[in-house]
Length: 224
Image (cartoon, rainbow, N blue to C red; front, side):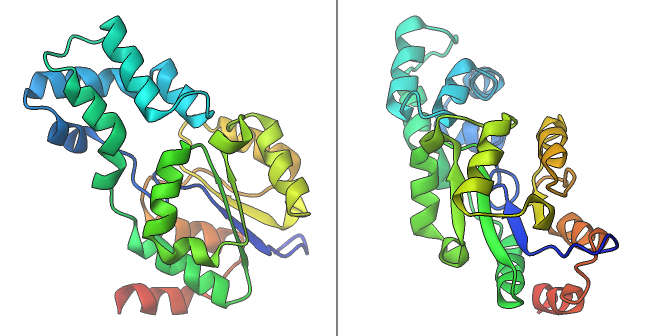
């Protein structure tokens, strides 16, 4: 690093970094009526219930039951809502290029951490599905901590639990509000918003913080 402090710890967000977030094409797989799919898609991800999932305050089943009972969205078949809430993550595939990049960084001596706003059911599913999690040195998931980004407390939990020096950490996250980085940067954690699901932008970020020695190897691995 130009300031003399070396990055030792790479902190990965999960959603839209390692695991693409669900989009309308996935939602449509659960609804026979395309209009119903669009209505639900427009509602669910910005709803208070999705935030409660991330905070561990509700289960997927409880979210579905609350939406169904209250008729919060005009959907003709409410069983489709329950099916979506219980199974949407099974339709999402892990970004293999990002996983491979993480493995290369790990092999080159960097510590790998996860800091993510995510429901416990989603995390547990992917934890069993991908070997990415076997290289991880520590994990902080909002649903277990009952606090989520950009709250400063979740960053302090990560730093304190794993005894990390903030200035030796790089955060890889896609938060388009930049609030996550306003908080993390204030603590000394380096990083900027990366483009969603974009391994090339992650590599560019690595270059920006002078993690240069692995770039050629990463290029060859991803092209091979």
